[in-house]
Image 1: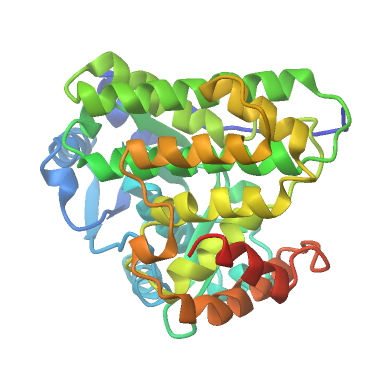
Image 2 (image 1 turned 180 degrees about the vertical axis):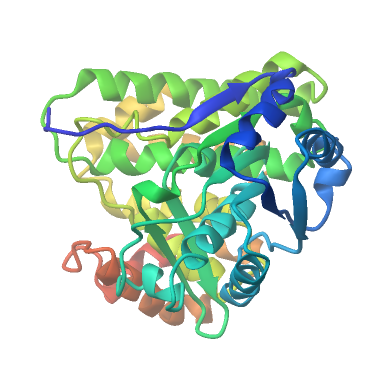
Length: 385
């Protein structure tokens, strides 16, 4: 078990009645707020009305900023920063899924500095301060509501990068499972795959020799994600399934599972970021569903015992690593996730370009380029044709 420092200051309000605390919470952070959201789904699921009623009750001055894309882009982020500075907002409310929260974090960091926000994502600058952020989650997937990470795409270069810092932890996050009732099936599927990938990365890539607690927690969250996803697809109106799923997605990437596992690499995410950076129409979870089995196949000799454990925990015992990967792919297919590049509209001719971009991301992330050379990334993607 490796040494670690665990810190997570996010106050989580969870449940169907959590918004009754919202006006009291937002009063702590000022009088003028930038409300950030996507294309308007929050006006269909009830979140927008609940937020606006609470802000009115709290006597807030509200500036709205909508239009965040599923893969949030730098140009829109810069517009949000301009508005936040011009309007001199005190804090930000991010209402939506991980994309909205990630862009809100970028706006929060960019609004308090005099240089370009992209410098945080390329590693030229470090996030030290930010406007306070309060989140209202409506799409469980990234756990950005309870971590300090943010991902943005520079649409001009196709480079999709991440940054982080303690200043980007939300002050508070409101998780009402009822807001997820109107989500399309594919968003439940892709959110589940995203959450599974957040566990797969440290599960298979950790450096600790012995850490039964973290791995046992990971096994439990993985089983919960699988079970609740399947149940929601069958019974989409069941609140209990929605609630259990929502919390499992958050716990998957709030830092708890990674404690004591040591340094973890994120090759699946790096490759997927390259895919959706170049092909922004590809949903993050869809790209991960394609990459994960392909990566497992490339690494199967090095992760044999963990791969068999992963498979046994979720699907029952199998004879070998190839069978473990196949049963995982079959499950992904069963819930409606893609498992090949062709299914997400990416031609095999794009593999060299994706590999070049993925290697660039991995270098910025300080990953092992001997293992994840451009040539080896191409081999991984060849497994996903």
